Image (cartoon, rainbow, N blue to C red; front, top):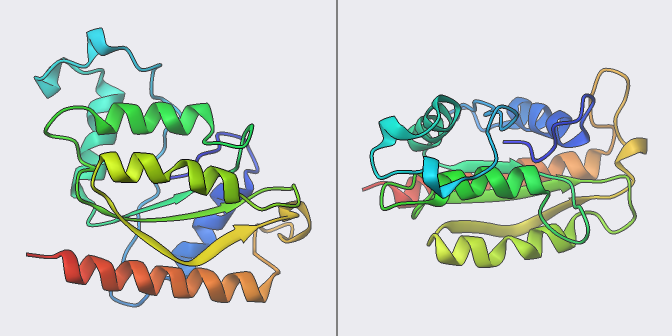
Length: 179
């Protein structure tokens, strides 16, 4: 999932790059967070049928995934609000589709520090949900406005190599996590 809703999002482009770099035995579906309403506990009842339709669909898509890849910018040194909202919808209840799930985090930003603070801000979320994060290699793409061409392809070959390694590590963790 992309933490950015922006048309021309570098993080959505990054997910598309990742989809092309997947190990042969993996497949990826990009899940949108654009239609999710603001989190409201009154709408988040134990019966999943009571949740808004967009939330139920989102949670089902996550439940079907063996692992999660999140690509996100950094807003105000942290997780963008739209992405945090999506995580809040997916994290609630004993039926949370995020519980114990392998996860990899990557990010791109036009700024100079990559997305290091956003990625660090995710650690408490991962701990609370007992998720299994892939920590290395870190994929923190700074100056993203200079690293994609007009077609959305990543021109930074070193970053592309790191993404490939991160995806391989996620694949390995998924295989280890299978019952």
